[in-house]
Image 1 (spheres, each protein chain N blue to C red):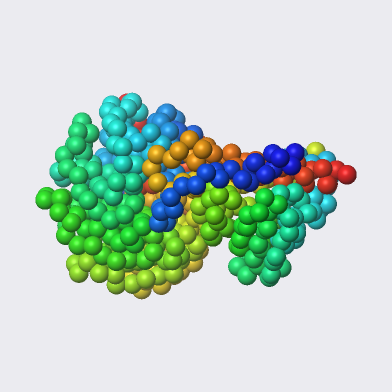
Image 2 (image 1 turned 120 degrees about the vertical axis):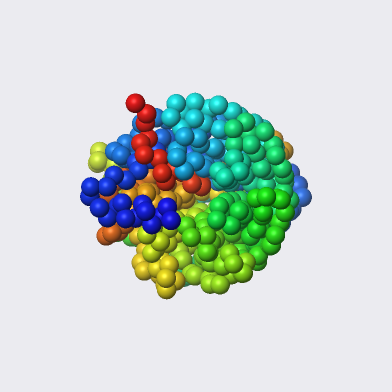
Length: 178
Length: 321
């Protein structure tokens, strides 16, 4: 489990030239959901605080955060167990619809091979007495020019983010169903 | 001229407005969704290739061009049979596309090669290649000026290109990371979405200068105008909204919530409807312009972009008998 996590977050560690602020023309979409056998309020309680992602994303060692849950002022810095750092800014927060959105202005592609990353996580009633958590993201690949090497393609970036989402959602599920 | 006639038509019940097809490129699905605006129903979905993005339809709706960045291709499609008639390779990362109908050419931006390709409208054979700025994205043909405008995303400029000589006539500094560009029907001004500035740059095409910079929502993408020329509409990708701006005063009027990551946007020639493609929501929002109310949400395909002129403003009917 832990090895897989590090793998997911540590993809694209191969060194490559850093070029200006270009990216491939196609934005990538990842949408992952999980059904949880627990009421939405309980599930939302697990993820509601923007500064406590370390409690449900095991790849995160600790979080430095400020601004609480206030959109456009709240920030968090994730210190990963693998050693990397990801800075994230809260852009939307809606407790009544149990959803918030955040962005990564800039990240070392060796830590997470993405550019212009934005994401939303939402808890909803699944109509079967439980909840659905959806985590979706939009971003460009880590490699910034034409013809990326095989390990730095759209697919590699997509797989890295999908791996993070799968593991985060699995952890939320296991915490909520405990 | 055309815009005025159509607006008048929209105001008179007895007058029949054109009812063009909408051509919505779906990036993740690799398809185009074709919607008949007479009914706002999907009438067909056709495969295009890997990650289609840009689209441009002739005014009369008979021919459609689309860029396929994932496969480095451009396709020409028959607007009525929905068959791909021509497919060419364009290795520089084709993205934006617009049609120069007067000269029977198609212009395609090549993102990685910092060029614009000029292609024959019937065959897609290359006619010319123009070097512009870094990462050219959007392209708008301005027929009344016999020019094309190209946004250079990484240079934060707009290149003004002659459609006769293919020379770059001017390079205009605009806001940061310009992407979508649309000229007013009069050809007097063009509006550019400056993605990183959360703003729109308004260009005067007589002087080739930025005459106004307007704050909109977060990460604006593309721009449309109402048929009567009174309002501009800007898609704000990260706000899931449309910014509505008074063209005369250049003041914001309001914002309107649509689906997630709205991208392509165009007004229907009837003057009443506005169409927005939602990339994350896989849908097209149909909005009533008069009261800015949501009229309908049409499910499309995964990753709807429709980056460009996705309907032909004089096409009378979307299907032929």
